[in-house]
Image (cartoon, rainbow, N blue to C red; front, side, top):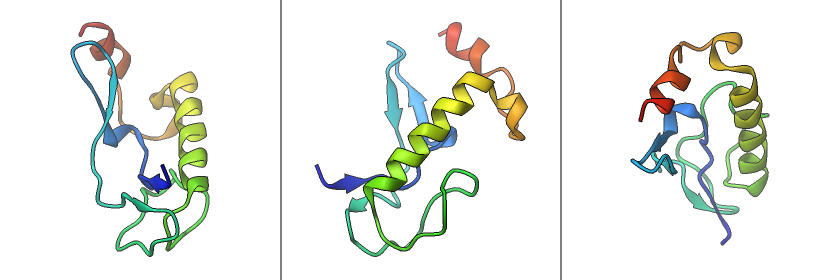
Length: 89
């Protein structure tokens, strides 16, 4: 596709009734190589960046995978009860 969201993190993911993930917040959504007006959420990107790139998605998805395995309470963010809310949907 050649497009990156550039801000994948738990705050920017919602779930529909079928529990399918839906990305929200497209302020940093741009074609690869385009200069960004805003970028990422602290601790969800590897380094400060100014352009849209595929590597930002790869890093953020890996970080999201870690976050899901460890649980948010272990990572300094206040997402308490997220699993219970998800499972009760």
